[in-house]
Length: 133
Image (cartoon, rainbow, N blue to C red; front, side):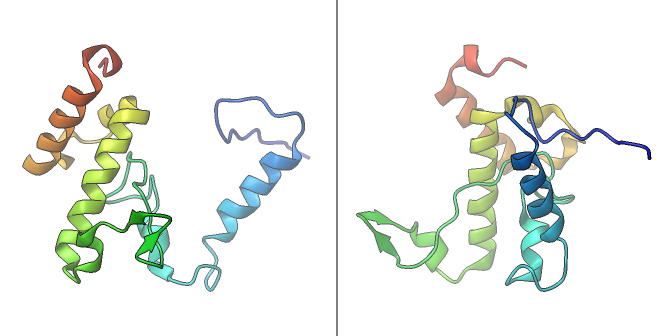
């Protein structure tokens, strides 16, 4: 029987059990009814489209204030366009901070003017030595 090797990341595990669990979780998310909102898969990190080659930004749930941490007001505004923009800005910032090499993947024209402003700001905050291209 042919065996196909798959990678779940750049690290070493003691056994295959954890890797198997990751694979089951990943594949099961694609099955109808597994997620409460079927559109969630389209908004995941690395999903083709708007979030391709970007890490997911912060995610909030209820209550609006938890242990002194408040949900950003834009997320409570009801303005879906502003919420989408905020999420993309956060994803761009996180990707620039954690995985800057991903920003060079894909079509460079996928970054609009606002994206470029957010990335320039993120690079300034991180410092030139941490944002090598």
